[in-house]
Image (tube, rainbow, N blue to C red):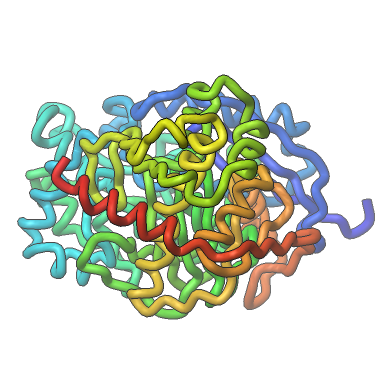
Length: 469
């Protein structure tokens, strides 16, 4: 094997867990594995651990691996008691029951502008702080038992170390910045927000912050564990993003996030001021509805995902006036947790599979056009747009995205970029150096289509018309 050093990267996402084993210097993929997570918005965290163990076995084990790092779905709430046991099923980022509690906390912190100043973001239902307040208000007996709070990736890193000693609980800036009680500008927790959320001053443990290029502990088998990252920060690291790059990810949720050298504080609540996994910042806009809209399209039209794309490309841009507002499961940006989807402008002329497919794709993507627009309005530089995620594999998506964004879209080869980012972080900690090693991503496709701004404008009229629905 020579000087080959192997590292493992994990992506514990909402729907599944992926493990990649890569060569630390070159990034060459050696092997990989995966496992599934159940649907829903709350879950017993031990299911994550069982799925991770299965995915590691599927990837051939870790016997020859010299470092590991875990990327995971952001936000969420793993509440732990003084014995190290999980108090209740973890509430995930996409659980919107804490929307009112988010509003309450923003008001108690001095309003949206003051909240954004303190933690970089206006709180919404997804944030851990909002879920802690929900716990205090709806399950006060559980809230009184809280001795420590972790996020999915923190908890898994802790479990790999045995999962009992609170002093071994660690995280990184990127994931901590999605809690709502961490200031990414100063890289410090705001303990007063945790106490405010839980409605009590009892002692509690928060994971210590580990630098992106450092190890936080070792597995029970002696393998060093790097800091880890939130999923979007992991993807940015896996894509080797630089300032000026905006990454649009089409997964369960849709996200548009930019690598930035400066922090953001958006009192409008559209842009979350997160940290990244390289010591910089990751202003981000998240929508709840992305690839699941295409899933719905396959059911409505009775065709495959590839056929949805083909039908959409066969239609005229704008679907002859048919527009979709894709709030199928409420929405996070804009903050409308109780909203529903709307198909507007239907006529006999556009009541066909091609136009319906086109409207579904355009509606999904227009929400992310709004997301990139929000980043630009906040002063975030937008140089390149990179399109990733499961839906990006469909050639119709990149073509229609380019027409709606009004610029060239870059599509990297399909890959597990969150897991790759975690692996690259593990390699960085293992090899040292001022920055993570540069890996060859493969050939990037460049897609350019004619601009269709009228489609976005019609979507925005529908969006604003339905604000009170």
